Image (cartoon, rainbow, N blue to C red; front, top):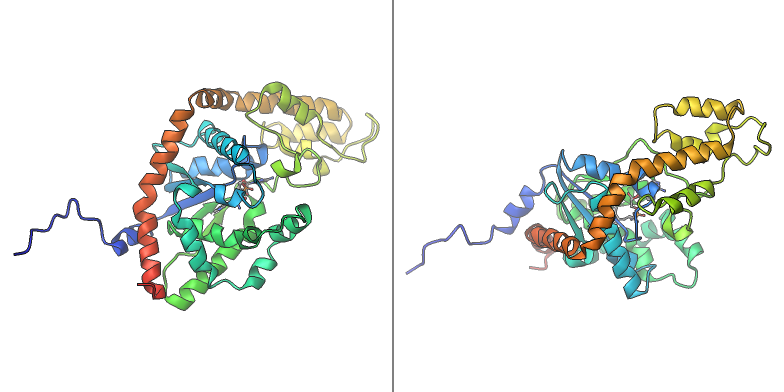
Length: 344
Ligand code: TYM
């Protein structure tokens, strides 16, 4: 005698769960680099917040990726916590999106291995970030650095996400994810959507040195949720138009990072740029104004950040719930992929 089926408790068939995943889903990842910086927010986090109202949104703090450069366990743990608190403070809402830590869903790494088998090494060797890392950490060119974009592709496609909000500095990685998806679909049949990057209107934000991309590892950030004195110090240290030597010299706002950043903190930026161009205002005045505006803009988020830091158990609970909720989708995608590849 067969027992009656119990649809309410039986797990959904893998393919049904995976198919449900193809409705418009957005995914992005961010390194646990500590407190979020201005480049993170202008380039990506603003879009994370916006898209959580439009799509099913999943956001991930990518601690596996961070291991390619961060080797102190306590530092990694603290930075993961700080980034989670930053994202929540800046507007990610666990009621409207899923926030989790990558290593809490270890299926990402199995899928990365499977995708690695369709990825030519030459694609990875030509990745700009790999070339940069070879220069910036020549004594630590670990295998994780080379295979980094494969794990990034796995992060996205394990949830069959079609939209990926990222800053423009991630364009090459996203293109590589698309190539990996195409290679997989060609070999094993249509399985994953090709993920599309979603950019904000910000270019890659330059650091306080005015030359290189703003990045924690380069030490040129503006830490938007830090105490006002630090933000002020960081902004006042910004390199402006290097050809403007005297206060009376006309400035070139189009090459001045401070003038460019004003675009995001007030409607009067054209006027500010004109003041620089005609030497009506000096670089110091323009920096002071920018610091004031950044501090004012992020003050409510900073307050939320401090509250969250005072309640780490709350943040840990959100992350845990996020990872648990994703388990069925991650497992279903893996089951489908294993089957297609001949592992079952
Ligand atoms: P990460 O941690 O370097 O940056 C997180 C997000 O912030 C954006 N960003 C910037 N945008 C503009 N100007 C800047 N100076 C700037 N600095 C950072 C980045 O474009 C990014 O959107 N590889 C990714 C993490 C990742 C990922 C993923 C992203 C892992 N898996 C899957 C998308 C999908 C990274 O290192 O981002």
